[in-house]
Image (cartoon, rainbow, N blue to C red; front, side):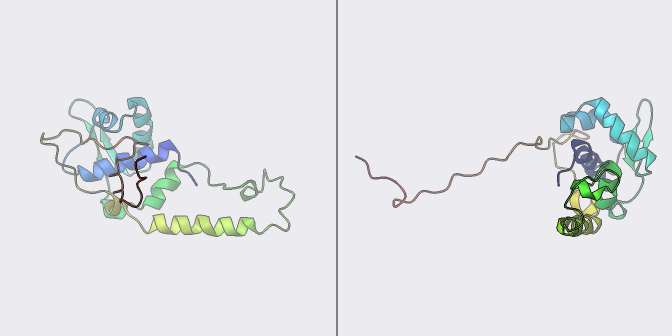
Length: 169
């Protein structure tokens, strides 16, 4: 299963707010930190505000903050609120299912159990579990730079022993 970018950014917004509980966080700050458009983040923030997870303050000096304690926000609830479709296969939706294997197929049961296990894990995890303290940037109120999505941290090259190296010719 793959989460949409929308859900990924929703979780990032909440994690950032949890790491900066002492102050209001701005859309501009989030956009710069996560390299995401302000318009995209505004949709996410509006949805989170409608769901009662964050509160927003308009105008100069405005921003957003969590309405609940991070320990009271379950990751499973956030994912359910942001994702629109959990049909892993066609037969999960009886209205549109045209699979001819449905009467005898056991795959739906296996995938249904896997999806339930997935949500059991997410429901047992809170925002407090995944959001650490704000990284030290050296500048008060400065946005912390997080790795961009898809960027893999460099890994040290393995040490090659003499046995692995080819003898010079």
